Image 1 (cartoon, protein in one colour):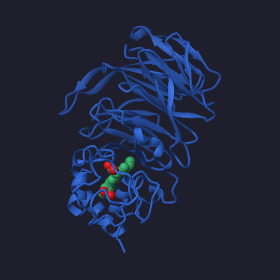
Image 2: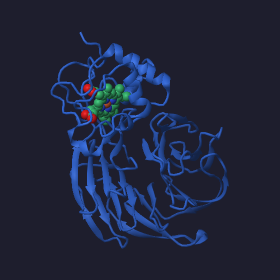
Image 3: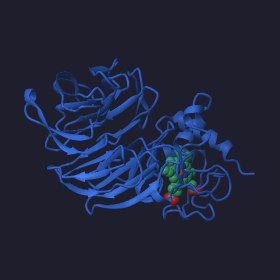
Image 4: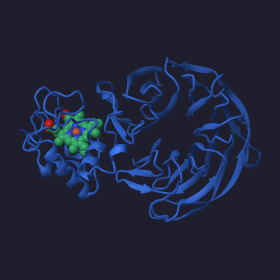
Length: 405
Ligand code: HEC
């Protein structure tokens, strides 16, 4: 499972089926023969992906067949692109890192797509390489289940490495910034070190392993996800834990990705569902996931409207009457109802006293242009359902499923 948000705000997701989704859409990008385990969407609409099939692919909606950048001898642990888009690093469980220098681009409508590479193999780790990251100045960092973080420096043909950290246990994730590197390990260690390897902060709790991390530079938030389904939010200006809560009812937090404004955190867990949680409201949610009706199990048999609801709404909205512990108000009897009128639910100012009446047209419009435009200031996260037929199916499903009696 992997998630990444592109500079233009698209979410790329990979889960246990072999495809990569680009949202809103989704646009499905195919090419892998096994689960996709690593993603980088910094070059969207081109997406770099690595999988259990050992391959690193460049997927692009305009490329009929994906471009294979390389094939390692083991599963791909991580992919990173440097700030200038000139180099791509791929890390593998075969113990190697490959550094691919882009030598030729393909011009497309959106953005040039790298087409040809000069590849160098970086050896040094003694076990699986699990994560790679470029510092803003271009220095490459890598983490491994050998328990070390290495720093790679030097010219194309003479890159050498030194050990920055020796941690007794395998390291799963790193985040590299201008001033520090954060890492999460198998034993639950969650630490931040400076570029000399000196510890800045230690946020280790009693949960392990650490499986996911993401950093939002503008707001200074570092998100950490673990095997117990918790997300911890760290304010890196004050080096303080600001939130620590259980996000998943069952199973781990596999992947995390902030939206570009830092207001939403996307979370991937065991179900084939991506949750988008407003960061400011995080601790008000019930844990998600692990429902008897997992999307993965029912997807094939579910009519499209229900699938839309399960995927995009059910995490926050109940369909039954009465109070609900979900983040949004129940949608029971929503048709014909004035917005902002479920008794006992605390709406935002924009919905409280709103003139909108919910019906086919207004619910369709809500997700045609997105809540952030339709009801600006609302607590509902921005989300657009691009396809008119998906919106129609969703509305049709809601009409039956929310019927008042
Ligand atoms: C991450 C949580 C979240 C998701 C996902 C979400 N909503 Fe909401 N929704 C909310 C919240 C919170 C509110 C209340 C907004 C406010 O008070 O500003 C809301 C309000 C609404 C309302 C207005 C209800 C009323 O009583 O006025 C409708 C209709 C609605 N959502 C439909 C949907 C549909 C349909 C989907 C799926 C396509 C969806 N929502 C997905 C959180 C969510």
